[in-house]
Image (cartoon, rainbow, N blue to C red):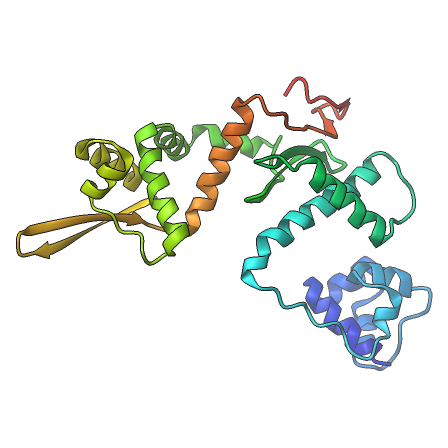
Length: 290
């Protein structure tokens, strides 16, 4: 039995100090210190709250060794995030509709599988407005490419986003068809050849996109302005050679999210808005008045 070691382990994992854990349990910081130093054990009446606060069950508190965090491969993260947001939404849905009692893991996994099946479009997506029990709203966006959560929806700070000139510049450039053509070629090359092989001259881009060289260079200037494109010049015997490549490949996930949301919003494809409450905290299931 190593309950004192487990308390310290899970407390640190949760990011609590001894005083913060004590405050949540209604005990003194000295009491928590004694538990972790094996001077005394928590009273049996405290164990349920202790386990809940640390995010484990009571049996785990008495396990021989604490569970080690699972090692996750980087390439598995998008799928895990996708399932995690599904799981959180389905749990929130039960609470929202007043369903009492815990749900078995088997039942939860079946509901996740059904939800995936329901949204199995050529471009699967769903968008939800989730109420978190307060007048402030949270927005969850799920797609095959990303899972996005914004908890600031409905807050006064969000209003400031409309004043950001940089955001407008980004949307303006992505709205330019020539810029998207250039970006598409570079993105396709990134997918097929990897991050190290994406260099194109203006002439090569002109041939692939069907644009004039001047149109390619004009689009490149715009893409450089919003930090999506990089430009290199090499000195050769017959003069300079200009090449373009993606500046930060990781930034494309944000570009894809912007384009996907714009597509969903302006297309005839149905997206679902559920569990919405307006500023007066009144139920509004169809999202009217947004």
